[in-house]
Length: 540
Image 1 (tube, one colour):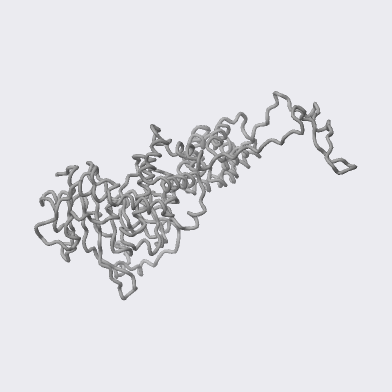
Image 2 (cartoon, helix red, strand yellow; image 1 turned 90 degrees about the vertical axis):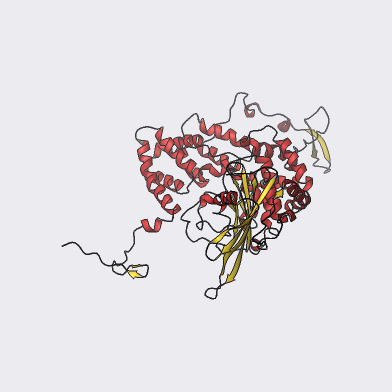
């Protein structure tokens, strides 16, 4: 049952009870409707049970065009045993309504402003009756009007916005995890930098990327991976940058991780970093509303996958102009380019002389009109691909590598494999130029530089090392190249890759220690829940 309109937002307050844990206590809707909402949201409205702040906010967009925004509070205690912070969920106040009204933009604004005055009593101050008031869309619009300009001013000048934007641009469809240091991560959401980063992401990222598979559900604080089911996590999460996981989580999640303010974030320089820096500069100059109009003009009508490249090319004309060509030296006299100034041996003063060696090029040194530069070797092509400065040069070199007229010889193949492996099989280069790694192009290169030498032990070791880095596009390219090469090459490639992929799978699921050989524990001394496992006896 879902009685949601675009004109109103309902409320539910959850309170902790020693017998019933965190449960809905009071709301602005009939009990039957409240219980329907409780079934949709109760898995995530409690504050995470991990060291962290006493207050956090989570926003979730759900199927059916509805959304919920929860303020989550907990008591914090310091235990005498280990001095670590412990707490229990205290109360959660949740707003629920149509996603058109309780939009990501409105959710970030409410994170900053807190509950509007129309929400009635503050969390944990309500009685059992008469319940909570319904909040109108007009009440939310008033909050937005008074909060937006201040958010723009602070978000635009937030130093950490640029690296977060660059990470979000790297793969717009993958969940984003942002590591925040102490003490910022412990600040209440209304005062923390999470809200500023979310607002900058919304103002710039949504305007540029549009709807993508990474949506706009978010949480201002989540524990490290492994504490909760990753399928229940929102698209954008903030975690403590100080939390270190010694082993891989049992339940991993593919996500982009960025730690703004760290040395790695400060020194990175890719096209995504440049684009993010230019957009932040425009944000500071224009403000939020004008910036979104500027982005709309830049990418007007463009497909979602090409918007980043289009914005980069058009903004580079302003923020990274091509330097002017150096001026040609002026001739001594107009119309007589052969007249040069040279110092006189007698007087030391310049004298006008004609030097035939300079003004005339010997016939044998003149390049022939039909002379063509020799083609680059495959190793040289891959080296230039790895260092290509712009997307046009990259595309041109990639075309040459794919359509190589002559297969490389053994020496060229060996050098090409070295360069290919040193640059992580060109995967970072594709991403730097806003391309997804092209499995066909990579497979064609593999066909040229790997397949002819697949019988060599050294080449097999190189392939295994490439695959161990975990890039799926590289593994797909290796398999496709072998598949199309015939003569049982696919079986050989599978034999090479199988142990590598097995180890990756086990490592990803924290099972490698169990798989690896090691000393067995004595069977009669293995503890289990405080008891000793009895020794099994064979049947008589």
